[in-house]
Image (cartoon, rainbow, N blue to C red; front, side, top):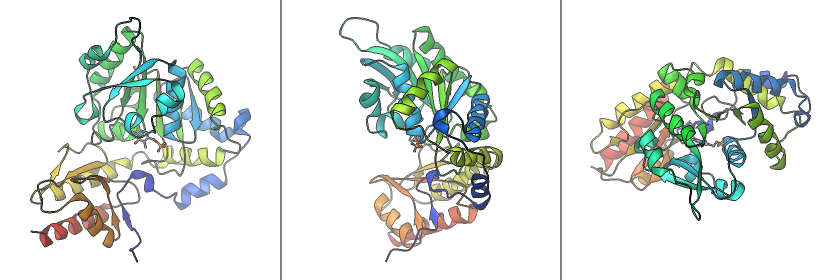
Length: 349
Ligand SMILES: *Cc1c(COP(=O)(O)O)cnc(C)c1O
């Protein structure tokens, strides 16, 4: 029988709510969220809106729903969303933008998931009959499949300015925005200065079991409320869940620095192994993409060897693994993972 997973690097969604978070959940004041009567949800929405420098915010069951609702509010059928080719919204959300918003993606080449203002200009469509309408520029901060890279503020600002000049809306998939904040010291509000809508995930590095919070103008959030309800995302005593979010914002943000430090340690240990490359080589947040093409083994074989030792990493391709650090994996855990990879490589040499 397979050994239970003790060190789970497959994603930062693997975190379990700790005792103190659960305690906060059990003591939260609650009401009917769908009627706008849950005080804990209201407090969470206000907190995130202020943090992102937006007028209003909306608690939703998932980050995916934050993206999808943003697209339906921003787009009409026939619209086009400019986005990095490696973006989560493009590759990992079941083609939701075409399903719900009737919009299609215009992907741009984006090393590490980051593109510049010139790429937006090149992707913009001049209005003409039969052409899709350019409508949204979407950025992912930090990038996920771009290796956890952080968009510099100047690049973000320039991309948003070009989008706005052309009459487009700007949207940020900020699933791990607070990782970018902790990694750089730049505030969430500053990162979001050029964005019409942005959201953070509570269920990634922040360690909550459920939820994302979408923010934007008051009018945008009013429209988003209609879609939340329509899609079945309106809840009842959701303060139980929002309380976890408030707890996480108080206790689990600064500590993201530990995850980044552990990711760097893992990357340093692995890149010292013959044939192993970290891509991109610089680890900025909590993601480590491990290229093993130049070794005598494969990504699935390494994952299997790790699994035997109670460790899990994601297999991205036959030659690439992904490891994501989070609050349930400590330094000893990443050192152990590196030891197991080293031993497996040694056994194949
Ligand atoms: C996880 C993730 C999402 C989706 O969030 P869920 O809460 O899992 O629905 C969207 N974008 C990025 C970049 C993510 O990593």
